[in-house]
Structure formats: C-alpha cells, structure tokens
Length: 137
Image (cartoon, rainbow, N blue to C red; front, side, top):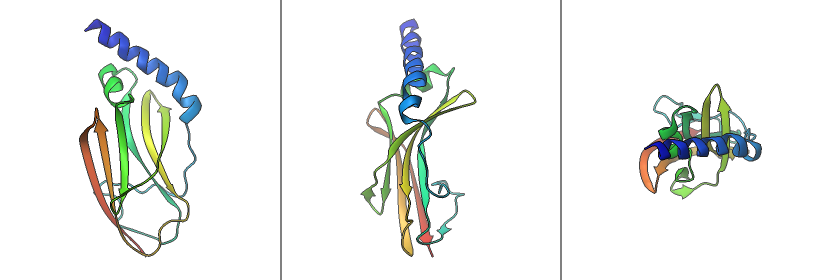
C-alpha cells in the first residue's frame, strides 16, 4: 500500500510541475455553458461560448490524483451525437488540481436546439454522463 501512495505522489508531482507549463490557462471564448441540470437551457445564437469539464482533486488526495488526474481518466463531449474536439486544460487553484477538457465555440451555433452529452471515463469505464439540451435563439 505504501508503494501506491509513493507512486500517486510522484504522479501528482509530475503533473503539478510538467502539465501546467504546457496545458495551463488555455484561452476560452465567451461564457462557459455548463451541463448541469441548473445550467441555462437557452443561449444567444451565433454568440461565442465554451464548455469545459473533466476532473478535479485536492493535491493531498493521492487516490483521487491517481485515478482522476491520470492518463487513464478523460472526458468526451458530443454535440448531437458527434464527438467534439477538445484541448486539455490543467489548472491548479487553491490546492485543487483540475484536468479539464475545453471545447471552444468561437462563432457559437446557429439558431436551433442542440443536445450536448458529456461523458467522464476512468480506465475505459464511463463513470458519469450528463446530457443538456440548449436552445440557441
């Protein structure tokens, strides 16, 4: 068990030192649209926005870091069934490390109703699926 925590600590250290230098603070376009049930269901057509989701862990939480901030964890975003491109965005804020996946829509979407599906995976297994339908007017 001790080896696990040493390994998790090493992974965390590498991520804190290496990833933020290459993946931190990716620029976003427009406001963030969320996939939670409380997020708005309407948005202005042809207006920039972004969707960003993934995993976050406290730096001191080695099991979380090993499982959710590792290369074995990910997030996929689908728009009307089509996988959307994303960029990994790693942020460290107040002792919490986030490995998030950013998808920018700099030109927004034309008027209409669209369904977004966000899928969080760990070790190839779906651990959370969120669906949000948004009408762009």
